[in-house]
Length: 30
Image (cartoon, rainbow, N blue to C red; front, side, top):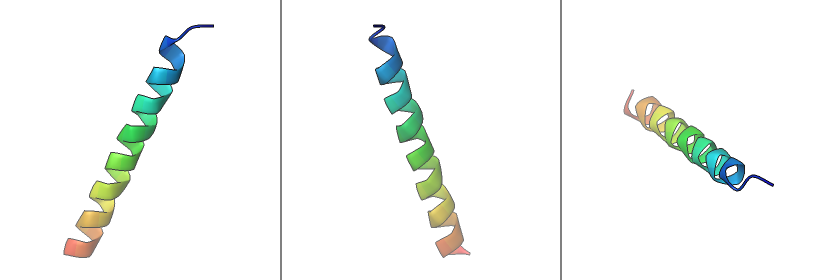
């Protein structure tokens, strides 16, 4: 199996979580 895929998926998930946090922060600020 390719070991790069799991890492890539984790990076995507972390990026999505960061975006969600930013959206939440923006929502709270407004």
